[in-house]
Image (cartoon, helix red, strand yellow):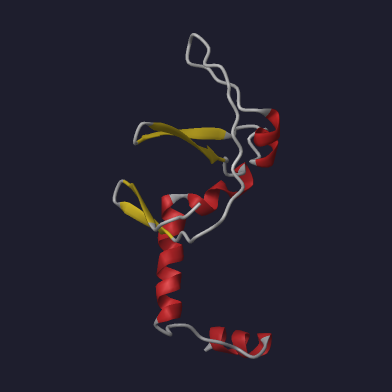
Length: 118
C-alpha cells in the first residue's frame, strides 16, 4: 500500500502526519451487515489491531465509494494529562526554547544547584 502525507485538522490545530511507502499484506473478509447497520470485525483482526481492548473505537470514513475503518485506541487515563491542550501548549513552548538555544546545560547536579542559587 502506498501512503501519502496527510493533514488532520481539529479546531485551530492541524497535525501533519508523515506517511511513506509500505507494502502491506492485505486480508479480505466478508461480514454481514445487520438490520441496524451493525457489523462484526473478525476476532483475529480485532486482536491484531488491539481493538479488543476496553474503550477501543473505529473511525468510519466514506471515501470514493468505499467505507474505510481506521482503528482508534483510547489514551490510557494515567497519560491523558499529557494530551490536554494546556500541557501541549507548554510542550510547544519548551520545544521552541530548546530549538532557539534558550536552555542551560549542566555537567552535574552541583552546577545546576549553584545556578539556581545565583
